[in-house]
Length: 164
Image (cartoon, rainbow, N blue to C red):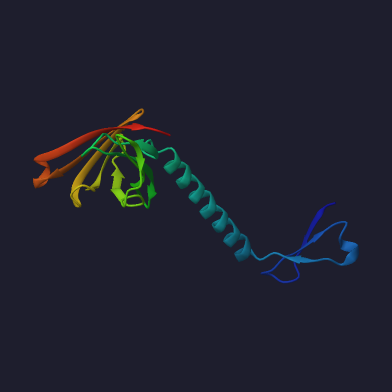
């Protein structure tokens, strides 16, 4: 089977596949159509690479918080736009897993990566309902999180452990 290109019109060459030619099958290939297909393929490839970059983000996954006010939680960290956000997935107290009204609520808000394992964004503290200036850093299976007020003068810190 071969490929034959003939030009019936100056702007739209016709392509005929040998072997199908007997049936009179002609295909018109438009340069704009080819360029559009290349653009779409490049966009799809770019999205795939962006997804791979987020998947490789060390903050993505499930993390266990430290005990705060007698309770702790599992936080599911995932990409949210160009940042990472964390949602309360499960809650626990000293007796085990509990059903909390905070499950599904965002605790880590728009943490933007700085490229060196550190992040900046906001943190919500469920016990008092306040949102604080947040900083976060990831090193291996440990995540350090701080929530600050007064421009960072007064901070509360926790170290979380990666669950999965």
